[in-house]
Length: 365
Image 1 (cartoon, one colour):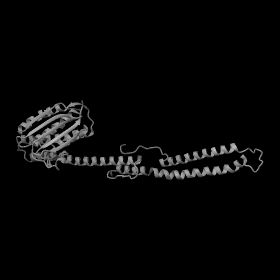
Image 2 (image 1 turned 120 degrees about the horizontal axis):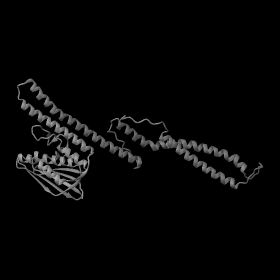
Image 3 (image 1 turned 60 degrees about the vertical axis):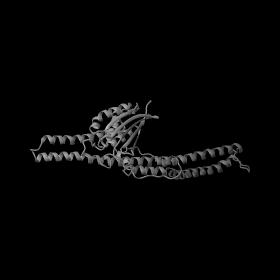
Image 4 (image 1 turned 120 degrees about the vertical axis):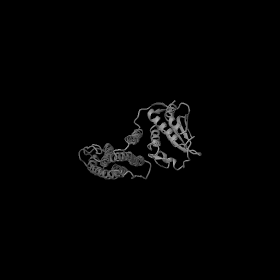
């Protein structure tokens, strides 16, 4: 069952096993030392098998005087090894105990706890630092997912509430315009479907479980520009695609969605009329680069980092008063897709207004 540790047979603790190992090693070393001493003593001391005691040392005296002392020394070594081994094992395993306690806290949901182990850079310190870094990334990821889930639930609730309100109005007024009701319901449901598909695509790109193939970003840029050319023409925006071939490895579907979102964002957030959008592809060093640049209103520098957050557009949250307002996931999807393809995303406000977006992906020869 998920969340439960499988049962294990009872056994000795690591501390007890280390203690027995220390004591056993010390006892064996002591026995070997005594055996060597005994062998040398018996080798050079004359034998007195008749039991005649003289002034000179003999084997009989050694056996009856040295053997009890040796047995006592061995007993002392064994007890000393057990006590000292238990103490040393506890000292050596203390960092591991702290790491285990932190892991239990993390398993219960307390991701803010950190070990912050002090001391020399040994194996336990390295394990502790790695565990702290993992907790930090996990805490950040969980917080981001919770925030995203809250925003997504709010955005999905809006079209459902609008649909219910439209149906309530139609029920109270049976003589109303049915065609208008159907069109408005279709628009609201279309927005909910777009939002759901974007959420699924965002989750797919975050997991990175997609097939990879060779993709030419210049062809992707041309396809995205061709799709959005009617929108640009209706808004009086000039849309240009320049540059040469730039190959990378990844999902053609996700990369097309990435470039399409960038171009659509550049068109929608352009000047009312007469603006320009330029899409350029190139190979820079070992990277394939896509640049999308658009004219528009000046953007505060502190606003730019927030543009890749879900359900953000400009300085405010997404609006629904524009047929191309989107669902607020355009640049969030771009950021997720770029990250899944091991690339980088840079957003720089233009001095004259508008935005320059640069995507760098690993290139192919």
